[in-house]
Length: 625
Image 1: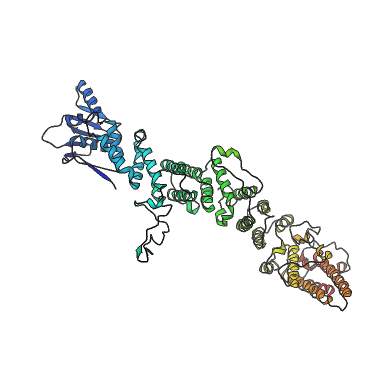
Image 2: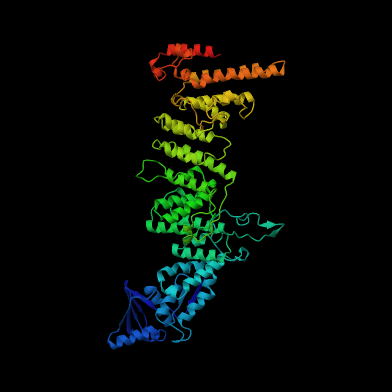
């Protein structure tokens, strides 16, 4: 730290109690000056020789026949006045970054100019500021911090503007010219850690990181920090990423708990102002999406303005593919029954999709956030990442028993058209939702399961799905069919199926539970048992084997005819499996075996004894095979 010594005489200032200061000399004092709650007993001659203001005040007291002067508005208070008084006596005083601004302002107040006496205090302090303080990185920061308690004097004397310009100029200088010390606790380069400092026996020049100045500015109060960053941005020499890193570091330092998605103590108004200021200063794309979402959580908790929250959501939607599921888990307001705020994530996903459809965002925000908003077209990679993100988010919020079906389905449908290599994530989300919502209706269960494409389930997901008693009957049938069809094709894709078989599957050739179907609603509500699933797997395996046996023939035309006949037989058998609820609901009857419709299909399975059910199931399997 730079310092400057003034005067050469010993310090004769003494204290008497807490409120009295006096000069201990043989010559008695002749004036008492009250500064705040401190009374100074001093001599008129040294003071009046250097201060024009004290000359006027002493003249006024002489007219009033009083020896006391009252000064209550001097900047810097008693401490700054004492420095000025010591300077008048020629006593040794030391100026440094902590007291120089107060001394400068007090000297201005006391009118200690060159016109009163050459080499006066104002001149000497100005020399010290310009030759030492403003040339020092850390001293400039310290001085800037001290100016907050000395306004408007420090502002009018341009001390604040000189500090801001000094700091901003040094922050934007070429890193190769940085020759002063700075605080830096980030992950350092090998050379900064004392490693790899030599190259062929010659000491290498240490590399200065581009964000070397970030941590030192975190100690500034918000109003000063905002002004420094604004000037740095205006100079245009620092990249958006570095400015984003600076704002990230400042927010984490000043807003306790934000890294954990919460606000821990502090003044609410100050915290709100901090978040809104950081949002205003952030260059587009300069910080990770996870940090933006932390800011959004803080903005919601602190009830920031709608303009700031909307701008923040716009920025998040532009980087949504970078987010993780935990980033999106925003707690719902206390008064709501839901665990998480699903509506705000719904808006984020909608804005993400809107970027692919609109060339420009709402121009009304331009007045508050002066940035050019250019269209951003989404790549397939981004869409795949966001689809996976939504699947994972749905699986998490699906654990909430109070989550309505409409919110779950509505969020999933926004990205239903996005490409996915697998629907395992969709299946996991559906399974989690059905597990926590066992009481939903048939139509609601149908809406939920239509989100999944059974053809795109992996072998592991199929294995789990066919044993999942929470899934409706129709979904189990689809999963089993495509699992067997895929196995028969010897590959990972569904083979080209005969038209009559495809027609029996929901959605025709698509085989997705999302497509419209004409089958009965009871199939969606039926819950198969493990024995019935095993029986169904056996039936589909039989179809596959029969189809393989029929495919062998000497004549090509005979082979083609036999294959068509086999497909028709298989179709009829599949129709018996898909259209009938009898295998799974254990409601077999002689009338149904003869092809007649049954009037008791809605009868509860518990009304039929287990022995009779097993007998019917075995006889039905024999008739189908």
